[in-house]
Image (cartoon, rainbow, N blue to C red; front, side, top):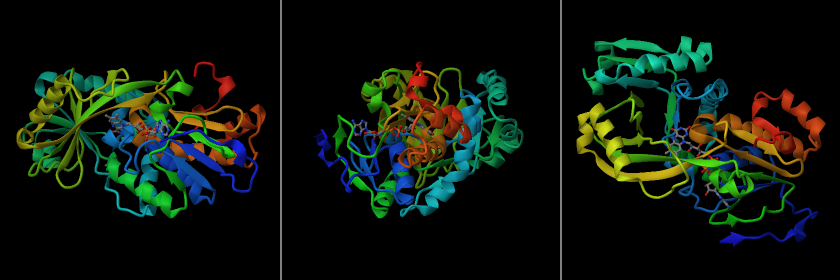
Length: 383
Ligand SMILES: Cc1cc2nc3c(=O)[nH]c(=O)nc-3n(C[C@H](O)[C@H](O)[C@H](O)COP(=O)(O)OP(=O)(O)OC[C@H]3O[C@@H](n4cnc5c(N)ncnc54)[C@H](O)[C@@H]3O)c2cc1C
């Protein structure tokens, strides 16, 4: 269903406080928070309540701020570390259980690829906050690798344990948030694609890549993953394989389900996974543990990560009644609690008219924890 809105409800007492457009990861979290604060909220999502149209549905949902520092800047790793602390509290409030684990990430490499290891370590040292690196990076050698992750046996002579990293079940989060929105009285409009913004005091556009018509600088970065069922392997935490061509992670979820990912290809191609990518992902997993040879392929999925030119998330106020929250790129789950919280705070300040012009916006921005994320549209020509 496509919706164009009748503006005649403007000014009536029935008017919504917030209309949130796009009910993937970010939209659901923002709606959850604003409804929890007692506001009248509606959420419009073109797909279903399960979230199958979103990038979040395909994601591996690794919460790995230190490992991601191999390619992400300080802002992202700090957002990730702060968000990791928030997830357990957030999940505890949801009405359905969500698998969440904070058992660390194991990084390994094959002997022939050992040149990758110092490069990766240097990037982590350079990009991560010193405290995150200093007490979060444990070198393992020989039997220590097998002692840490017995399923890998003696296959890897060296490895690193990043003991504080986490992961969760992406689909359970989406489902639990949908249930939580109902419980908090949010008007949820599933199967409702929005072409013109709905009427509400404040509109929050969380359409991910679907916001591209309003935000031309957004681009998609395609990612492909495999979901396999592999009983008997028994990995206890996500494993990252350093490799010059096929850097890979294997994220064990509940019930012997593994998410193996992910490719990173420039472009907004949402077509099915290519044979090449499937071969690369599955061969790399097989090389980590031959037991994956007997795994059953449940799904091969592709989606695009919504990305801005600087690879940072952004919360942009248009100077009137619309906020746009986007650019979560490959770190959506890792940083969403902090991004959603910042967006909700700004949205509430707009509703209360505590922010109503450029000066008050600047004051507000400077008082927030993550001022780098907040922009007033006219002040940010690059976006
Ligand atoms: C292969 C892959 C692996 C990933 N792995 C990880 C990971 O391990 N860790 C991590 O932190 N992140 C990961 N991510 C990134 C994460 O999934 C995204 O950053 C996150 O989903 C972005 O959230 P979002 O809400 O902005 O966008 P989305 O989750 O895509 O949600 C946007 C929603 O808007 C809806 N929408 C669009 N247009 C309209 C419209 N016109 N009207 C109504 N609704 C609309 C869409 O249907 C969608 O549900 C991965 C992504 C991919 C693709």
